[in-house]
Image (tube, rainbow, N blue to C red; front, side, top):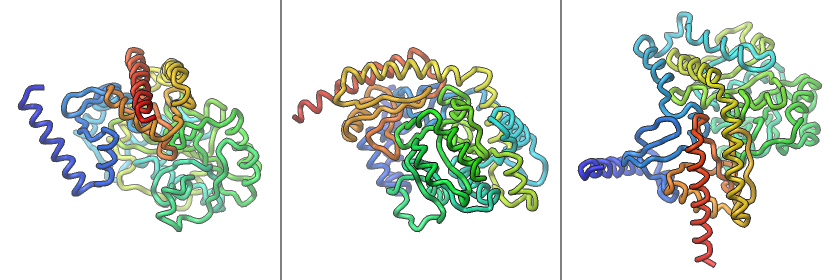
Length: 425
């Protein structure tokens, strides 16, 4: 970068930081500065993200799972661009072909009897709708979810989530929610009864530190829902669409929910798209008498639906579920090898597919390591409900060579962290 370009980049970075301080979120800016993330993101391609100064990073945060197809996937960008030049948003008066095509495709690929889709704009919005649909379809209000869960920060989704630090400032939340330990079949069994509207679970808890439940847990939840006439809602916003090595994480146990929520990578990393996918029984209960009982002005717009169709098509054509499984095994093995070299710093490395968590012995060690990784050209972050755990969720299109670089950077970062800690002793 020449001197003039460097000056321009510095000026833009300073201007953006100043506007964050004055108009966006000064506390977030301070946190980003501490973590070394006070850089202006500028362009991306595949697993590579560049800042305005031209520095390259392997993006192992991936927009919390949004960029499964990588940044600016050219096929998705081209499809959305073509649609936007023709008709980007729906008039909401006539039939919408991309909406119909996306819903049909989701019915084809989702498990069990899932058939109908309501297309919205985000995972939290999908959860809000799922809660409404479950209460109406069951005629009940009690919803069981898990401690440590994360379903979003809107009021209903927050009520279902299991982290008090995000919930307490906004109390009182919606009534009717109770929480049980995740992965504990006995606790779930004790909580479900004839008044339960739905059991709401993530197949793998993302924000609680990539927590994988014991085998049979989802099957037990399915059986309990059937036994008591409740619905099973699976939040696959983060785990779905090939991330864990199968198209949906519930496929690992061959379990099908009554309602599934999707978002993040559904938009191909180009458009915000969420979805509530449900059975005919659920849809009939919700929409039979009033087809407009649940609506969204922007949800299901043509450009977003085209992004979703293209993203799902790529995932199938390129068999990204299998890619995630194979690449995930390689990355997990490499990270476990580094853990073995630093057993006092790293307590555990776990995951499924390209959804991996690294648990540190101390939150401060995790912060030092993340900062060092950024300096080594790898972007990661901690999980929102557990600051001792670093998430590693790169695009599913990450290359083997990039995986090797991530492993090497992790090794270097932990060595740097160990050196810092030795100086403090």
